[in-house]
Image 1 (cartoon, rainbow, N blue to C red):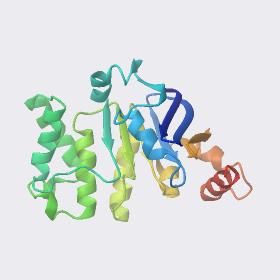
Image 2: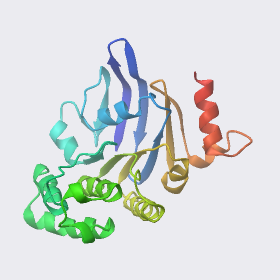
Image 3: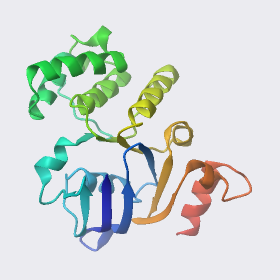
Image 4: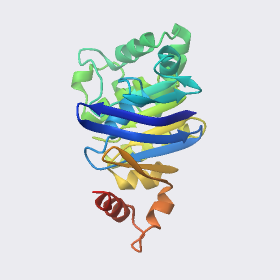
Length: 239
């Protein structure tokens, strides 16, 4: 479980995250929505321990990420929007490197490698250097690295960016299935993705949590019964 309590993050006079509270349990796929500058990236960095809060706390399975960082990070896989890849490595070498950072044993890595390569359809490029890959394969390699230790919490920023429609369909189905007994948080601007994958929507604007609901309930808030319309009206009203 993730518990976020009175979470704030300031950058000088700017309050990027403003008194945010929520809990997420195993089995939930949560879509993190908000316009540009709403605080989504800052919130994800707080959840993954990349930055420390100005005040408030993040608890991962009842451990404060600030004081029990090592325990918490073992539970988390994170793919930022910009990715994190070494272009001079092959896909296999990069995934091995990711496993070493996680302290995985060789046999555990080899078992997990087979799964992520199959699930993310990387077999055809496993021995290629990352610099030679298409944008879509680079994205899948980044997701594979986040999944290599089979994390209980997976946090993804724009996970299907650069993928073609078939790849998007495949990744969405895989993540939906993976999330049945895990926690997945996905930041996206693609409303189709929200409807295809999310059980729950957390909507931010100006650093504040303005809605915490399901995609279906979000659509039903306005006569148009459309997530894009609801998103626009809610974030416009909060200006």
